[in-house]
Image (cartoon, rainbow, N blue to C red; front, top):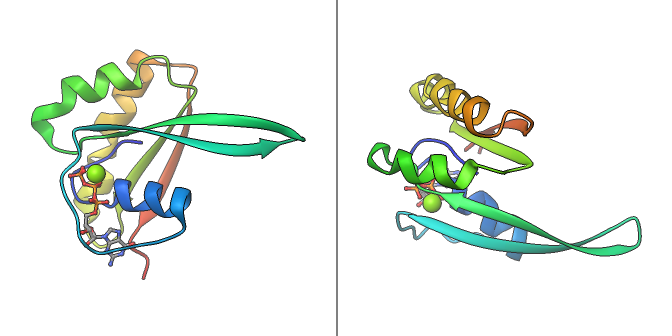
Length: 110
Ligand SMILES: Nc1nc2c(ncn2[C@@H]2O[C@H](COP(=O)(O)OP(=O)(O)OP(=O)(O)O)[C@@H](O)[C@H]2O)c(=O)[nH]1
Ligand SMILES: [Mg+2]
């Protein structure tokens, strides 16, 4: 999970995992969020990594994207610049885990 600061990465992931939303927020460094799902009758655990959006932590984002199978790239539809900046995240994914599936999500559609 990657994208600019305050686009709502943590909220998306916690809502997906817990089904709830609260407006209170704090900046993320890196959080490992395992999610259990049954796929084709088998119990699976998907390891999500919620990364920091702040530019100064980009080297850490790069580290956590390495070896990912998929990357959810989030932007805020109310701030077009956060979509422009996804180009940088896409470049990092292409460099560090070229096989990864890239999923672009526009958040804050409410
Ligand atoms: N209106 C609206 N606000 C949202 C939504 N999702 C998140 N927010 C707001 O955006 C703030 C930041 O959300 P976070 O999930 O912490 O953002 P983040 O991308 O994880 O930020 P960093 O961890 O700093 O990179 C929250 O406090 C909410 O106020 C949404 O779907 N709609
Ligand atoms: Mg966060």
